[in-house]
Image 1: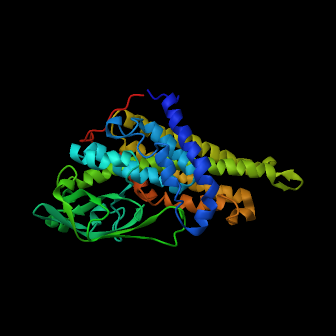
Image 2: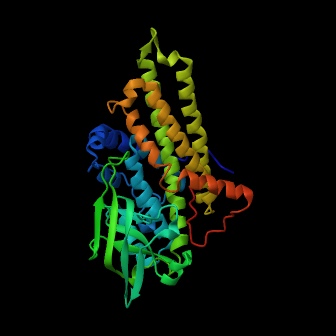
Image 3: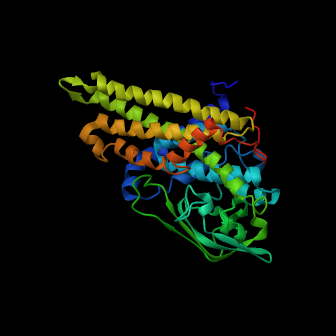
Length: 400
């Protein structure tokens, strides 16, 4: 049975994230968004607040919090700006939780603990210039050579590419299976910044999430120690799908933060702006837009909470997470569009935050699985073409 009452620990995490958002992210976001630069104070503030590993077990440097807490923190971070939630998505959802589930003890000691403590920033490298939704279309290869794998390829649209210290990277280890598009030939590796042949760069001119670092990673004959192979050869596709379950979850919860930001900004402006000698808050069509934001927030929240509940039970959440991500991102886009409409001409200017909300909302309908991918997934579940198996790795059951 799902309990919608938050525990004291969950509320404490929410309040920590809310404080970081209010004191560090929001005050400078206009400046950094316009300059398309990452606020250098964000990562230290998140580290100090223990937000970079709070849902990792204490044995590995975290606070041992649950997945509902992760959702609440994601919502509060995105209420400040999408770029801040992205940090939680890639650092925790796409690196730390997968390493907790799939990594061996040596890897957890070497890479997970520093990540959980915020001593090293982590990210995830799956997408390539010609491979996004088509995961088996990736071209990166990792060829075994003695005690190393020789990694070649390029990753694109990687969050924190120029910031991260360590990367969870996917590449073909079986080139025959690559020719046949057999995903059992893909493997996962932990790669460190500083390995010879690894270079990164930033992407400029993005529509949204401008205050977040996004870039590429290039691998040219990079020697990766065999000890950095995660789990075993051929497990990369399964690990990647597990990663996406965690990342999509944070995107869904974060989108609720964006909906809430749109709702609050619209309500405030509706009381301040007057037309026809009345505040626009009294106009029925303005009320309708704000009501839609509230409804979208409520049912999108219920969807990510269901997915979080499944995760807390150690159960497969792919179907629930996909639905939550699809719907929450859809509602965030709609809320942002209506927020601009509420502001009228001023919504078209970066003088007000709704212009940034509108730009930021679009990315989430593309990354972590496009809206089209999630539409097909949900149809296939209903039609019987798709069925989830039990997860074949250890996902910690969290008791709160």
